[in-house]
Image (cartoon, rainbow, N blue to C red; front, side):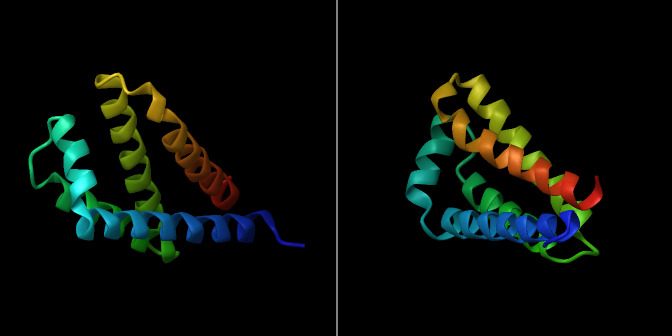
Length: 113
């Protein structure tokens, strides 16, 4: 049977993959992301920053020595998404970020709780 900590590590690696894949999607398939960011009044280059930030978050989550910083950035990403969706009243999009936030918190709890 898997220990709580190792279960948390596997979940963290899954989260890392999700952040890296989403970051790459931001960088290399920017049209849908640019449209969203324009609607939310972010600068035109923001999809590049967001993509790089998410890739960095994912990579930091992979390594034990940097995992704490990866989780800190993941929380910043989640809070930023919540703030944007609330500000622009796009409550119908709250489901995915709520699931992601719950998985981030669960992984943190399983590793350090």
